[in-house]
Length: 194
Image 1 (spheres, one colour):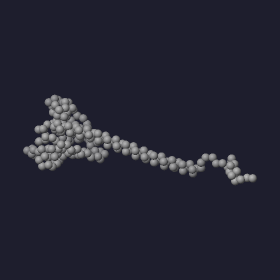
Image 2 (cartoon, helix red, strand yellow):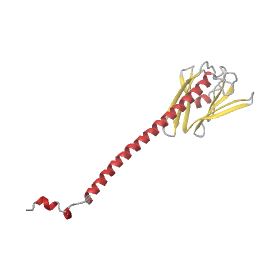
Image 3 (cartoon, rainbow, N blue to C red):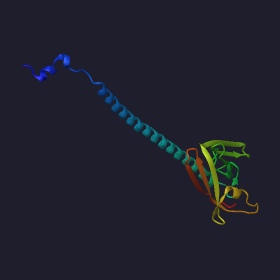
């Protein structure tokens, strides 16, 4: 007596392996899974680069602010701030030769998509410079006039009458970088009477 199950167990009738449709469905599912993993990894790498870039910019901005702060805090009381086409300069005792003892002319230069700081003393035949940051696309400088309590642009300050003396209480520096980030630095100018 023959049963239907017995006929299926015949060695010639057994299937070995997967059908073409099963293989295609497996390939499609594994492809979808790999593309989702690749998207997650790609986003993770991008986020990591953005965070690393922001941390690096933050660290460099901290250094820039600290140096500018020291320069202004050690500015000679009777010295003025001279606005140039590519930056500004003044006399300060903050320098890398002998801090606090030697007055040097400090020039902050924003040309060539960089921020550079130069210091020099003709009396000592000394000069030094270093680059603080790259990627600056534009910058503006405004000065707080202590007489009327308003911010004036560097162009207005530069073109004021020679007899017009003003008391500059602070400076405001707006920096724009290649990646679109904008930084605002406000520094008080102590004991400033120009």
